[in-house]
Length: 499
Ligand code: NAD
Image (cartoon, rainbow, N blue to C red; front, side, top):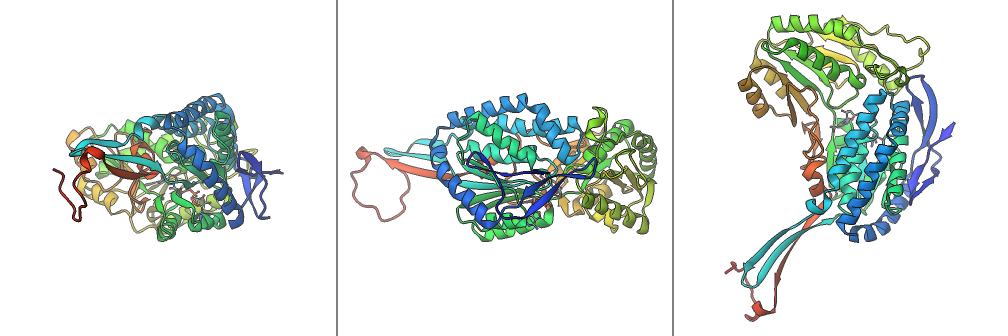
C-alpha cells in the first residue's frame, strides 16, 4: 500500500511518529494509501526551518513573490487533469467538480498576483511641519492553515496564496482523508520557484493541530472545518495569543417565493442540494417554500429531477451528477440522520436508502433523499447532514421564512428565489447570514471579494481571500518621520496636535 509523506524543506519526508490514518478510494471502499500523522516534535521541527526560510522570503520584493505565484498558476493549468484525477480518487467527487475545486483555488492565486498593489501602504505627505506619516504592511512570520476534506485543492490555496504573497512562511495541515493533492500543490510551488522551507505540508490529526495551537513561533492560524473544531481552535489559538480565523459548518436555506420561476428554483435546488453528494459548506440543505401551493409545486418539480440523478464513480464520465461520500463513517452518519428524520415524523418523499451500484457495492454511495414537512425541532433540521439529503420546511409567509433562516445557529450562505426586486432587496439587507444569493443557489464570492459566514459558521474578524486575506496575513506598522529641518524645537513632553 502506498505510504504518503510530509513535505518538509522541499522534500517528501516519511512520518516518524509511527501513527497513520487510512486514505480510502470512496468509490470502491478500498484503503488505497495511508498518511502519516505528525507528532509535536515533527511539527515543531517543520516550523523551525520554516522560520529560517521566511526571513529571506519576507525580504524578497512582492513583485518577485508574485512571479512565483504566476508560474504556479501556469503549472496548475498544465497539471489540471492529473490534479483532478488524484482529487477525485481520494475524495470521490466527479472530475468536473474536482476541476472546479482546483479552479476556485487557482483564481485566488491569480488574485494574489496583485500582491505588489495590495501590499502598498498609506502615506500622508506633510502630516505636520516637515513630518510625513506612513503605514506599511509587514508579514507576520510563520503562519498555519488547517483545512477540511471537502475542498482539498481550493481551501489550501485560499490559505497559502495570500499567506505566501504577503511574505510569510506557511505550514499547511491538510485533511488526513485526502492529503495527496496538497502534497502535489507543494511540489508545484517548488517547481514555480518557491524557496524550500517556505511552504511545509505536515500531515496529521488532533495531535499536530494541538502542536500548531501551542507552537510559539506560529503567529496566525486559518482554519476551515466543522463548527465544534472551529470553536476549539479559535478558543485555544486566541488564548495562546495568535491571530485566528475559523470557518465552520453550515445549514443553508433557500427561500422560494410564490412568484419564483419554479423550474429554475427546482433546478437550482437539485444542483445545490445534491452536487458533490451534499459535501459542500455552501450546499443548500433546507428548501423553504412560502405558501402551501409553492411547496406542493416545488415537490412536484423536484421529484422527477432527483430520480434522474446519475450517481457513479468519478470514472463514470462527465455526466455523473455526484459520487460517493468520503468515508464509511460519513455514510453511516448520513443514513443515521435519515432514520432519525423518519422516526421524528418527517415525510420521506424520495428514499435513497436502498441505493446500490453494481460493481461498487463496497463504495460509500448514498442515494438522494428528499424530506418534506420537516420542522425545526427535528435532528435532520438541526444538524449539518453533509450528505445528499434535502429537507423542505413549509412556511406561510415571507417573514416566517426569513425568521427561520435567521434563527438558525449557522450563518454561512442562503438564497432567495423570487421575481420581486423589493423582496430580494429586503432579504439581502436584513438576513443575518454572510453570503446571500438572489436567484443564485450557491453564492460563493469570487476571489477578489471575500468569503465568510456569520454566527456559528465563522469565528474571527476577517474573511477568507479577497482584500481581507491580505489584512489577515500582515500587520500594520505606522511610521511618523520628521527630518532635520523640523528638529529644532527641543524636547516635547505632551502629545501635540499637528500644526
Ligand atoms: P473537520 O472539522 O472534521 O476537520 C477539519 C480539520 O480539522 C482537518 O484538518 C482535521 O484533521 C482537523 N481536526 C479534526 N478533528 C480535530 C480535533 N478533534 N482537534 C483538532 N483538529 C481536528 O471537518 P471536515 O469533516 O474535514 O470538513 C467538513 C466540515 O467543514 C463541514 O462542517 C463543512 O461545513 C465545513 N466547511 C466549512 C467551510 C467554510 O468556509 N465555512 C468550507 C468547507 C468546509
